[in-house]
Amino acid sequence: MGETYKLTGIHHVHYYVGNVKQAAYYYQKAWGFTAHAYQGLETGERRHTSIVLAQGKIRLLLTSPLGPDGPVNEFLNRHGDGVRDVAFGTDDARMAFESAVARGAEAIAEPEENSDEHGRVVLATIRAYDNVRHTFVQDDGYSGRFLPGFVEYPGPDLSSGSIGLEIVDHVVHNMSNGKMEPQVQFYQDVLGMKRFWTVDDKDVATEYSSLRSIVVANNNEVVKMPVNEPAEGLKKSQIQEFIDFNIDAGVQHIAMLTGDIIATISRLRENGIDFLEVPDTYYEDLTERVGVLDEDIETLRKLRILVDRDEDGYLLQLFTQPIQGRPTFFFEVIQRKGSRSFGKGNFRALFEAIELEQAARGNL
Image 1 (cartoon, helix red, strand yellow):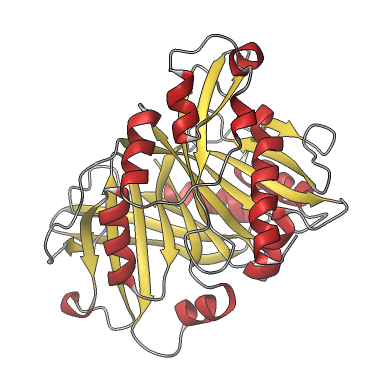
Image 2 (spheres, rainbow, N blue to C red):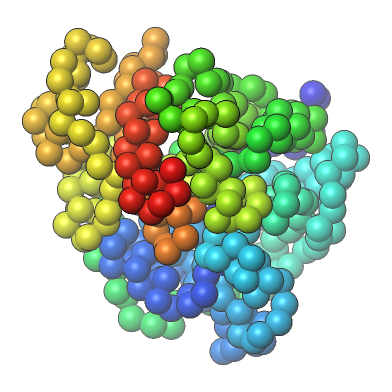
């Protein structure tokens, strides 16, 4: 669409939590993140406390409120812990914002330049949908800890050590029924993204439920975002369960890329992370379904790792249980060996595993 700016990737994901110190402890101990930067009362911030967690090029910004009022509390009261903002790095935040608003995006925060002794950063924010936002971050040449206003984390290093997570591979948005196409059109019209990959209820269905999904990506494919909606079935799909407990549409999960999923999942299981249970039958004739693999099948079976292949290669992936009490947000760990897709062949196994968990929660 003739853009004069470019997106350089997912700069960070902003996650609102009830207790930022406890959440940061969990990510350090269980996921191997390092507490990278801090903002709070000691830095002059009177409204909230934030901790930035880092691993590879992944940045998770956790924020908790310091009082009973304000937008963080409003979000938490409605949704519980969840993603508020998926921030994009860009070479021109002003142009990205002005272009998006000119094409119909709702402005949340006008472009603003912030600076300190480490350089300058330009930030601007638009609404994506409901309570989810996108912030454009232009931080070229900035050498500080994260953004102006953040300092080095003052607490002890509690990280259990990197588990090999490298980048955010993709971020998944769940929409209510009938809202997927309009949201995909929004990303096409407003951000100039393209339709990258798609599945529908003919591709993905169990006895009880199914979904439709369209993946959008920017031109150089450094930002990829599946947009899902529930398809009608005999019982409630996992997408609808998310909508019911999140109250609105929202970010369902973040997929984080690793170069060695066996090592990463092994560490995560040792650290106590709960994953969806995959039945033994999934691994029967696995190589006949997906071809010859570099990995040992028995190791994949032991760790319950899923595999799928497309014309470019194969991928390995596994999904956690929801990481909070509400059955909403979770993580995916993924390794790509040539594959550029999203595991269509695993969707049925994934849905069946989730349906077992839904039934246990009384939500199927």
